[in-house]
Amino acid sequence: MERRAIITGIGVVAPTGIGVREHWEATLEGRTRITPFDAGGVPLRAAGRVDGFRPRDHVKNRLMIQTDKWTWFALAAGRLALDDSGFDPAGRDPYGISVVTASASGGNEFGQREIQALWAKGPEEVSAYQSIGWFYAASTGQLSIRHAFKGHCGVVVADGAGGLDAMGQSLRLLRRGGEAVLVGGTEAPLTPYALVCQADLGRLSPGADPERAYRPFAPDADGYVPGEGGAMMLVEEAASARGRGVRGYAEILGHAATHDAHHHERAAPDGRQYARAAELALERAGLGPEDVDAVFADGAGDPDSDRAEAAALARLLGERASAVPVALPKTMVGRLYSGAGALDTAWAALALHHGVLPPAVGTDPDAGTRGLRIVTEPTAPERLRTVLVLARGAGGFNSALVLGRAPADEEGAEEGGRFNV
Image (cartoon, rainbow, N blue to C red; front, side, top):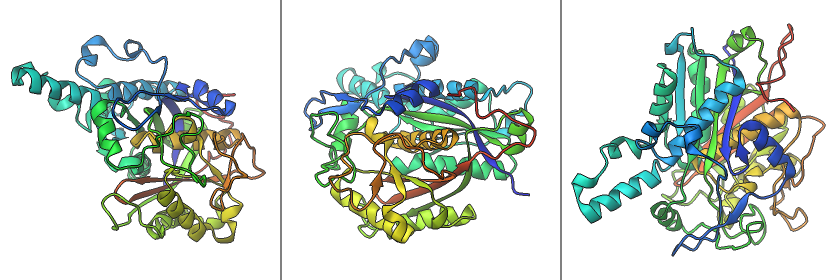
């Protein structure tokens, strides 16, 4: 029998809150957590920021000087995920537990500070930790060291698609014999140098109204708002979770990734490869498009990308494209790059667990949304068993993840991790 992968713990550090309970309660309030932001000379006036995060609550001083804010987020979210799952690594085979994260930009604040020191004062003033503090794999390494997880550890770099690709890797690792994977992604992309790099793509929204600046699929959408944070999750092999009396939040059923091979920045306008990623993910899950009860869309927020995504969903779902609910809770926080796919996965798992789809904010369903049925208030569909999560990255990366309701336990397991509403 094929081994099954269950999300048993969720740790969130995002503009919607720190910890899964705070995050979910804020989500159901359905209000934006995007706030005014002074980006200096960059044409950006709003961003999704994590408020109330105290690094010293999660990271020792000695480690703080060696790492970046993006890694602090990952360390905090990783600990929260383990606590939420009730998973105690003590006494378990450390080689059966892996760590996989996604990163689009690495340690921005750390790297910028040390580059400035190099420019202004010379190489002798650059921190010895520069070589590891900014590095894409730093969060994976620090999580592995902190928890002594010695299984397959790695990092996925595919911009916004990376978070889902990391979740797909967790599924493969468990099917190959692993016991558990700590997996997800975080970002801290609001530093000056990082913002200049983002602005160069020409997709940042110049809007000053936090409630209207990021509105995917709207007729007058003019870009996206960046945000910081993300999520980490503990994904366990089903028998292991069942042995602990835990049912979990959701099951990972299938994953696939494709590439447009079209342009180094822009998505292919026909959405063909994007739809193909979803088709393959469903096929690997043993399902078809008719089984999709809801979609968590990428929601780029610029007209060309939105048009391509709508075309992909129409290709995938056919006549059902205008009826299947499309969730866009990321409109509350902005686009978190590699943290986005991880946070969308957490949202989707919570939606399946509680039977409620989270709302998009700042979107008028009557204004025209490219033929899609956008969820604009917390909604409990009559059927919510299978959810499709989609993500794209700059340069043509496409990723699709299929989640299903956590399998019932005949012996009566708990309904989820430590968090229950």
